[in-house]
Image (tube, helix red, strand yellow):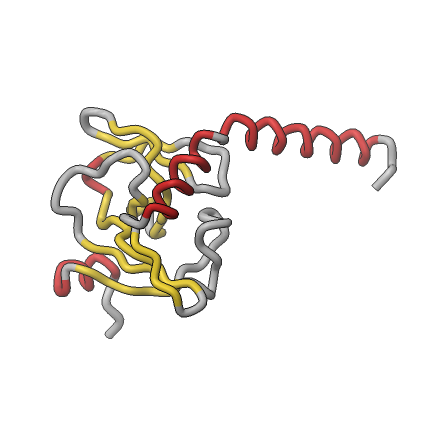
Length: 144
């Protein structure tokens, strides 16, 4: 019998797994990087990476803002902000392993990345939509 992530977290208090999906690139690469998740001991903070459940799917995205009873969360490689209630948050990222190197969320380099990547979101958003608009125009003009 396969255990769910909730069951593993309830049993062990933490879990380690290889991520799938591209929503947390460039920080996390699918089918390559391992993440360590633990059960939160307190409410999450801005820049934490939360594991939560959306329907029947598990999602690992960054906390952008903390509200009274929910979080505003977005993947590092996505452009949609989600309202995520406390009740669906299962865990929080504590460490990830890339190419044999363990990176803790308390490391200075990681903390710089989290703040920087979040701060430049408006610029990334503009570039994303400009790129989409250019592709649309190119299709209409049959340049692509």
